[in-house]
Image (cartoon, rainbow, N blue to C red; front, side, top):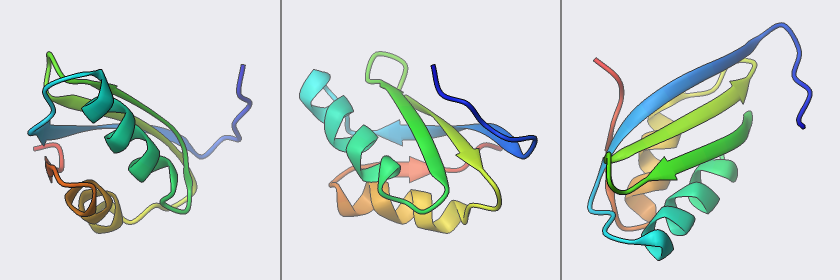
Length: 77
């Protein structure tokens, strides 16, 4: 179980293009490389990534990481 400080936040991203577990893993790994991202969970059946961060994390950096992995991401509305 991961321990986080008071500034822990959870954000959901809409991710399109994932079709399987391999896609989920690519997006998860890409997101977890973004500074401040502590954990990412992905679900291709819901077109979602749930990202747990600590501190200030640049939303644009998370979206770009997903794009760099070959998928599309959009911040929550």
